[in-house]
Length: 148
Image (cartoon, rainbow, N blue to C red; front, side, top):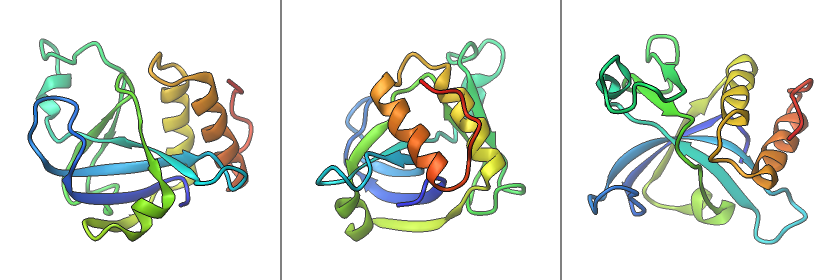
């Protein structure tokens, strides 16, 4: 799966907060590469609860990237990628064949570079995962990124 792929996962089965199974938007960040079997994909979720990031909100101090659906039409609603949340991971085979996943489009290289800069500063991404994401981005022509 290519970094920057946007997908919608209906009935996402791994909630981090509470037990509500609900649909979520995701951004593919990269993968472990073809050397490992199975290939593991790293992806971040987004939230549509934008008020949490406003002054006084419970995530006001978090670093984030905002997706405005007018600028990023692959998203059907405005949402935020919170860099202060750890990424998810799943085998590429599960993601590409899952009946509840719809692929919606891809982000441009400039946006991916901005996202990498945000996750690079995050304490929630291990050096190993950052290395895999860095390599994945290099493979699609995004170079000059700081190495983990």
